Length: 157
Image 1 (cartoon, rainbow, N blue to C red):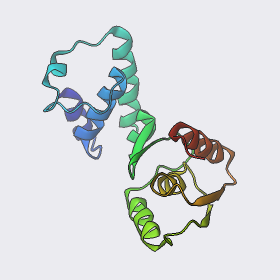
Image 2 (image 1 turned 135 degrees about the horizontal axis):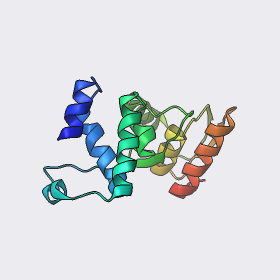
Image 3 (image 1 turned 135 degrees about the vertical axis):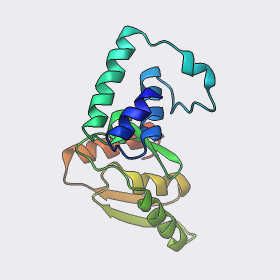
Image 4 (image 1 turned 120 degrees about the vertical axis):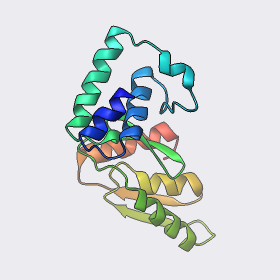
């Protein structure tokens, strides 16, 4: 694909993944994987979709993280909305969630999370263990609002 080649030429990490996610965003779908959706390869974009895609491509070429461009990201079985300036959940953090889950007592308990950011850790824990109570403390207003938004979106309190 032309976009993938453009990203590769600019040394954008994982150029295929960037293309798949940006096309999905423009088409209002999850990631577009050509091998799984070959009918979309011949799809002509509407002029407004072309402009939107071009703006996303320029942002990606400027090294804006794909997660911010897509607006959400999957993390440990949940989909979180993400936006700057709040940090994007790291893949390694999913291992932390697994470690915490393995160490939690089997009975209800309370936890405290300092600096939840997007809410990735506390909301992942609550999704798996609805019997626990977590208090999340965040000094960033943007991050606190994003955690609250993600909790409401996921139906977790």
